[in-house]
Image (cartoon, rainbow over all chains, first blue to last red; front, side, top):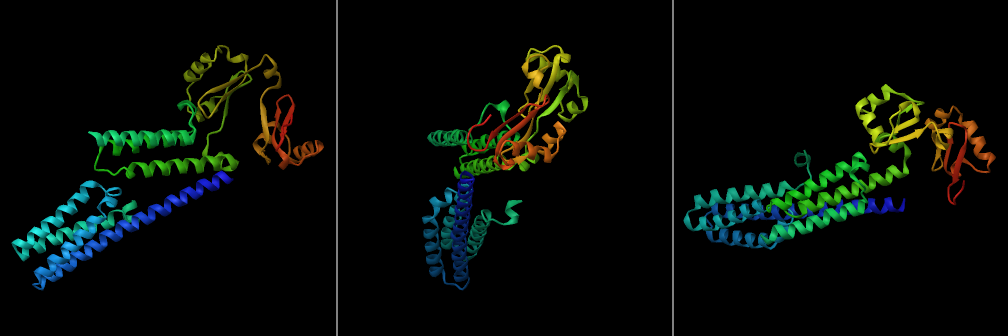
Length: 125
Length: 215
């Protein structure tokens, strides 16, 4: 029975680590999504410089977690989000409309990333 | 080129370690759950080996999960005989006193040709010379001939396993629980003190106490 107990404990530990990791993936991407949305709101009010600063800070913060995200999520999806950050930054130099379009796409990608690893019935089935 | 190589080494090591932990035997001796785990493990490890977009943890976590599930299941099957009754296959007597049991063959989904072939592999041609042929959960046949000491004793039916009375064994020897309890007490034990007790068709009773070796 001691061995069974030890294996059950290991299984519980694996479940706990998986839950913590999933929560962290959600937290990183939800935080980045909120940052992008804040940047969109600033751009809509005509505060382009503040929007650029917010987006730049959000991108830097998200990049810090990139290595962690790469161990959990599909690399292609992460690269897609990274391209989204770059495209949004470039779009700010072109026009507000192009920026809003690119930033909305980026927010959607980050939303998908945050939902992709969440332990909800929709993802399980 | 180096990344798939490193990934392959890591995943191969992980699967080999998993098999070592599970203590797997030959494919032919595997229980269905063992085979399912083995097939799934190799498939899961192959995905991140080929697709570099898939993180390594996408292969390692399911392999570790499978190992843990397999270990939990095998410990439970060892401890809980009732669970084993539901989850594991049981041995089936397909030949009794030289007569082939057609119903049992059907329930084991084994054809007459296959049975004859398996018997030939054991060097047995004359079915009438066989007292018992048992189709084991591993897929092998156990043969007890009519001639020789084994044939005289016949089949041993399990009456007590790890302190628990085996009622199907009692039914097979045509005895009651009261008889068994009396037989055990006569030897100075309670059924809970007996690790293994079996009776042959000839009536010979063999047993072993729970902790130290017995008969």
